[in-house]
Length: 414
Image (cartoon, rainbow, N blue to C red; front, side, top):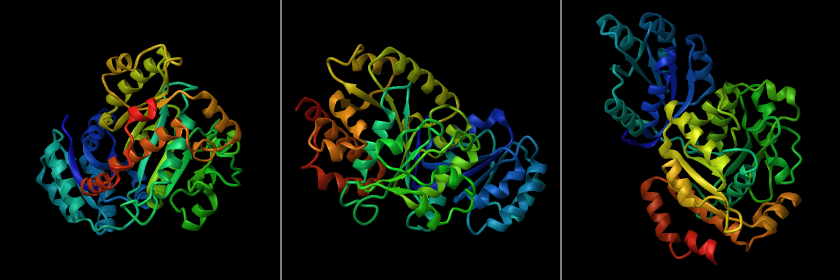
C-alpha cells in the first residue's frame, strides 16, 4: 500500500461499530503519514466522552451497518464541535436524505465505500493545511517494544530518552526537546529503578481522571530526572494496575503529547486493547531484539499481528541489542532475511558497562559518557530526531550537524 503525507500531524477520532471493518479502516488512515488515531470508539454513546477527552482535528464516522442510528447519535455532537474539528462520514448507503441530514448536522465530507484511500488522503491533507497551528500538541510517541523478556527494552527506552533530551538546537522549539519516558509495564515495570528515582505519584493518579488532567497535576506526577527526562512510573500496586483501561492509557498519552516533544514508552508488553491504543497514536515503533532464535521468532509473530490489524509497518524499526562477536548465535543478515526488513540501529555488546549502569540506576550519559554504547544511543537519538522533523527542518538540521555525525560503523568499530 502506498503512503500519502499530510503537512502536519492530524489527530483522528474514529467511530466504528463494525468490528470486521476495523482493520481495513485503521490501515486506510494510518497509510497517510502524519495521521494519528487518538481514539477508536466502538459504541456511539461513548463518543461524547471521547470528544471531551481527546484533542483531535478530525472525527471519522463509519456509519455502517446502521447509518440512521449512527447519524441520530452523532448529529448533535457534530454540531456542537464543528468549530473545533472536521467531521467526515463513510458509508455504502446512497440515500440522499442521509446526506442532507449529515450536511445539516455540520458534516465536512461525505465519502462513499469501498473505502476511498486517495480521496480520504486528499481530505486529510486539506484539513492539515487549513487547521491553524497551536504550538505544542504534536509530540512524537515512540514505543519501545521487546520481542521477549530480557532483550533490554527498559535499558533502550531510558537511554534513548536521555539522549533525545540532550539534543541542542531543537528546531521545533527553543533549546533542547522536552522528553518524557513512560512505564507501560503496569505490573513489573522498572523505569523508575533504572533511573534511581522514587516517585510519589504514578500513572495510576493520572488515570483516575484522564479527561481532565490539569498542567499542575501533570507537573506534580512527573518525576524530573537530572538528565532532563521526565519520568512517569508504573502503579505502586497490582490492584491499581488492574484498573487501568485502554481508554485511560490512551488519554494519558494524548495529554503527554500535548506537553512533550517526545514521549518514549517502555512497552506495551502485551498485544491487548491498551497496546492497540498506543500503536494507533505511534509515530515510530522500536522493536528490540537480540541475535537469538526466540526473539526473532516472536518478532515475526508480532509483525504478522500488526500487519493483520492494519498498522503501518513503515513506522516500525528494528533495534538489535548486544551486537558483538561473542554475543550472537545468528548473523544480522539472517534476521533481516527472516523478517524481510533491515535492522535500523544496532547497539554494541558491552555487558560490563550496561550492567553497571543498571545496578547504580544511572543512564550511560552519567556513568559511561565516553563509552561506545553511549555513542550508539546518541547516534540513534540524532537520527530519530531528524526523522521526526518536517522535511525542510530535517534538511537544515542534517546540514548543520553533518560534521558531528558518526556513522554506525565508526561507533561499533572504533
